[in-house]
Image (tube, rainbow, N blue to C red):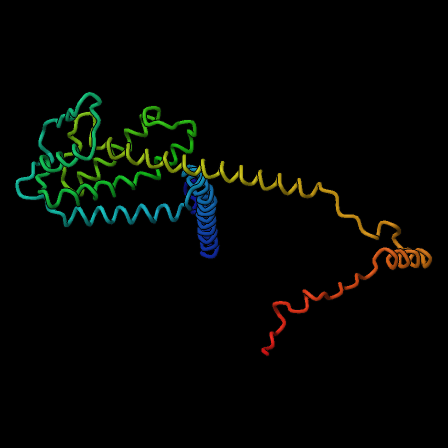
Length: 288
C-alpha cells in the first residue's frame, strides 16, 4: 500500500485539549517568572537611587514627591503667567551681554533687576517679586548640589566645583525660568544670570556646612573638658571613716571607741551670764 494514500490517524480531542492547557500553563509560568524577576530588581534599583541622593538623603519616595510638586507648580505658572505687553519674544535671536560693573565685574542683584526690566519689560512695582520668584526656583537645585558636594567633600569653592554639574544645573534653571516666565534667560552670554543664582545656592550650602562643622567642634571641646573634670573628680581619694578599722569590729574595739569618744568629745558648758549680758537686745526693757 502506498504510504501517501494512507489517511492520518484521527486526532484525540481530549489530548488536544490537554496540550492546549499545558501550553497555557507554561506561558503563565513564564510570565510569572518574568514578573518575579522584575519585582526583585525594584528594591535594588531604589536602594541604588537612594544611595546616589547623598550620604544623608531623604527617602526616594519623598524626593520624587517633592520633585512632582515642584513640577506641578511650574506647569501651573507656565499656564497662567502672561508676560507684560511689549515683552521681547523669548525665541528671538541675539545674545545678552554681561554688564560691566567695575574691575571685579561681579554680578549682583542690581544687574539681575536691570535684566528683568529691560529683557522682561517688568515694571518697578513687580520686579522685586519676580526676582524673589527666580530665587525660589533656584533653591530647587539645592538637592543636586548637595549630592555633588557629598561626593567631593574637599570642594569648598565655586571655581573648584564640578563644571559639568554646574553647567547642567544652570541650563536646567534657565529652561525652567524660560518655560514659566517667558524670560530670554538662555540668551545671556556665558549664562551670567543663571550662574548668579546657582552660585548663590552653592554659597548657602557651603556656609551651612561650615557652621555645622564649627558647632560640632565646639561641642566636642566642651565634651572633652567636661569629661576631664569628671575624671579628676573620680581620681580624688575618698574621705576616711571609722569603717577602716575593721569591716566587722569586735566588742572590745567598740568599747574602746566609745570610751575614746567620751574622753575626747566632752559637751561644752554654756558660758555664765555676765552683768553686761543681762540686758541684751532681746531682753525687754522695763520702765520705772
